[in-house]
Length: 108
Image 1 (spheres, helix red, strand yellow):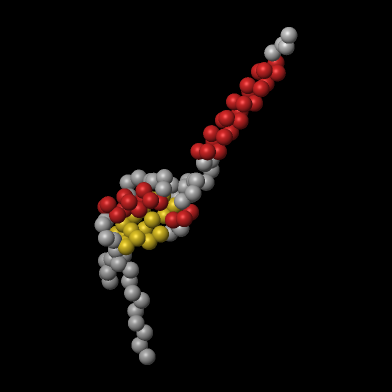
Image 2: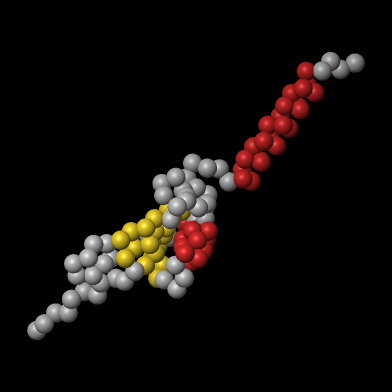
């Protein structure tokens, strides 16, 4: 019985999330029998998977997209606090400072 060769993937865009939380993409053409693979990485990193995908689709419309990281992992980047948390901490600091200043004032 003959086995069929594995289908070679065609040209595609690979999208992944870097350790710093930013998203990148690259065009990949695996080449054919005796050709070498061609990989062209996009020139910048993106804050969201949506931005990376849109950039890749603009550069290579209609091409297959392959995700190395799950797009739903597009939450706050590791090591970065969400904006709402930063604002909440700043408000808390201001409230505590104001109360401390009032407590230091002499009461007559």
